[in-house]
Each structure stands twice: as structure tokens, then as C-alpha cells.
Image (tube, rainbow, N blue to C red):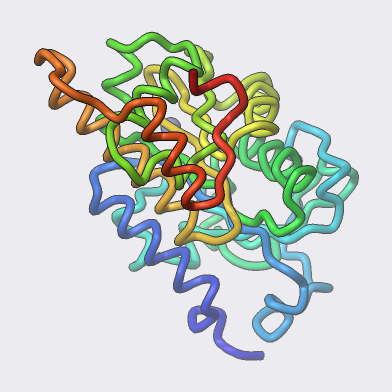
Length: 270
Ligand SMILES: [Zn+2]
């Protein structure tokens, strides 16, 4: 067996967590990450037949039966992950139709996965249904997106249009827009189901007065998705109180979409 701490998927996830912390998106134990892995990717590092312990998940996810996920632990600080990977991360396989997680590596002080495991796993199931290459779910608390949910209309079309207008790149990066979940109690199966429902039509789901969920095919893409929306929110907050003399018009947004071969969410442009 090779040393799992040298696995590229593990080192990349740690780099991502460290970078998210550096951006100020993951104060204290805020934020969580899950990465879907193939058995072929984990086999050089862990024996898939050796289960260290099993943990009930509290939800069913039959679509994810037998799938492997590297996931951050509950109560862990992204700031520390690079120093304590075997404590702060776990490699799990879902079984019993998603009701049980089998721990294959990590959480070595007896800990367990993030309290948002339901939202992560249900989001994976929702995204896999529309994109078989989907692998990553990231959750964090980016300052400007969070602030925007206090002062901007939470209507998804209006929220998306404001973000698209803040930077030329936005409509290219998230042409399907940003879905918005009004405030709900976190850490529950109910918010997991609601998030997954929103994930059917967009890779970004804002949790009002809390943060954001992003989904994608790899860690870089998903990080970049959140980074782009967060930058747009920052620009919005810089100018929201000032008279706007010009903006990105719907005609401009349409031209960007045409030039770069993306399809903006139907009905979002006039
Ligand atoms: Zn959170």
C-alpha cells in the first residue's frame, strides 16, 4: 500500500481547504467539502475490504450505493486540515442504500463526518443525475455573498441577474444562474433535501444568511465557481449604494453567451 498522504486527490482537497480558509470563507469550523472518488483511485492507498467502523447517516441515498467520498469532519477547522489530515478528514463508502457510511480511513480520533453530510450526499445524487462527471460539493461562508443575502431580493432571477451584471465573466462561468434557498435550519435532512432540489438546476445554491453550496467536476472548477460569484457579490456591495451610470446590459450578456457558447438560464435575460 502507498502512503495515502501522498494521494493526489487527498493533497488537492487539503490545498483547497487551506485556500478557502485563506480567502476568509471558513472561519472557525465553518465549511465542508466532499469529493467523490472511484475505487481505482483509492485502491493503491486503502484496502476497500477493511472497514474501520460504520456510522449511520440518517438518510437514504440509494443512487450513491457503493460510492466513495473523501469528506471533511464535523467540528474541524479548515485552517488546521493540512496539519491533521488523518483526524480532520475521512474516506467513506455509502452502503445500505445510503443509510450507513463505512469508514475506510481517517477520523482517527473517533470523529465523524460533517454535520452537513445529508446536504452534501443529496447534492451529489442530484448533480450526478444531470452530470455523470460530477464529483465535488463545497460549502463555505463567503463574506460578500453572505452580506448580499441581507440586502438583496432573494428572488433567484433577480439575484442571478445582479451577479451577472457585476463582471463579464459571470454569465460564462455560471450561465445556469444561482439558486437561492431562503433561511432554513442547517445540519438537517430537510435542508439537505431542499438543497438537492435546488442543485437539479444550478451548481450554485446560496443559503440565505448562511453561505453557499457549489458543485462541480473537480475541486478547482468548483472553487472557481464560488470565487467568481463571490467576487461579483463584492463588486455589487461596492456599488450598490452609488448611482449606477452604466451596466452590463442584457444585450451585452447575450453577446458574451453567444461568443463563448453558453446558454443563459431561460427567461433570465430580457
Ligand atoms: Zn455553513
